[in-house]
Length: 78
Image (cartoon, rainbow, N blue to C red):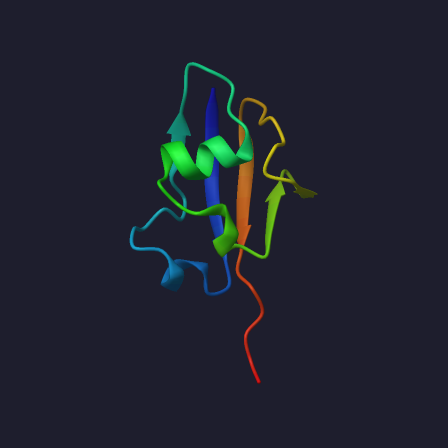
């Protein structure tokens, strides 16, 4: 299965690696949490939301083949 990763807002600055536009391939189905923690070594708590194929999803959501995952940064300001 293939999964495409996209970033929104300040997420890129929060991460130590450049994953925008990255495609992950896996032989096994993955949840959002497994994708973030095991495949990308990223803490899911860094994101305000995770959007999969245009729908807001929880970290236990099971990803489909060819899914596009958008990682949304928390709001900032004061």
